[in-house]
Length: 289
Image 1 (tube, rainbow, N blue to C red):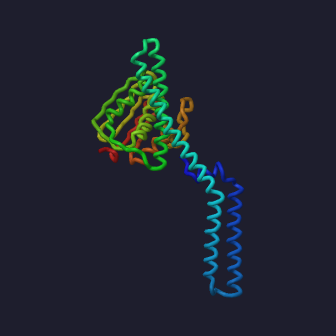
Image 2: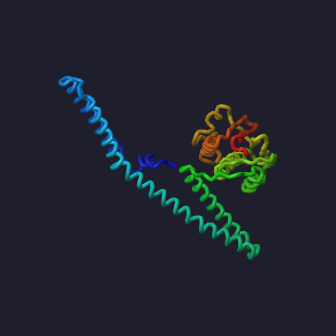
Image 3: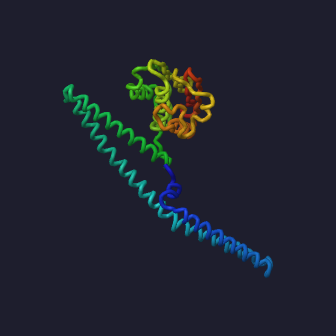
């Protein structure tokens, strides 16, 4: 999420405004230095410190005017949008939770013909809830208030694998999980793990083997898919970079993963060979408890 000022450059501050303030500042500085030259030439170096005070005062004045008349409206607008987003996000959670609760009750009363429709409603409500968590995580991340918690990795992986079950049904999945507990942002780690598992599924064909291994404070996700060229590995974390344009996606998944890992002190390594497969290793040493 952009900062108020950086966001403002695109929505409220015209380039002509910037040019006018910069031009005013440059002309003012030029005039002061020219005045200083005339001062020294005619009066000498006495009282030249007065010129320094005037220059400092002028700089502060121009900075104040720039902030007041150019940046303040942008900051205020961004704060209003931020407040609206948070209020809307809070209100969104209530109807979504209500839909899920009522769908759950209806499932107990529905006949088999209606059950499928109710399950679709429940799944859609869950998607909305996941989006809510995504935006909530982004806001908390921006203001440095992410909720960190203890995460049992084995239970966590079991839950995420169940989430991906429809995509994994035509692949062989092997899980080896050594009991491990980490302390980090659950939502951030979900985004990281989901991106990596999603890539393993996306780039491996039907009937291929995918392995998830938790051992020695590391998580490894291995696939036997198409693999990545050595030259492409150097660009793999670049935002919007995609090694295969025929696959769905926007090329931001691994960029998100790298950003979260860097923030949490989680090491990430990708080993891949074209035509053999890819192994992604997360070093959790700094978040294991």
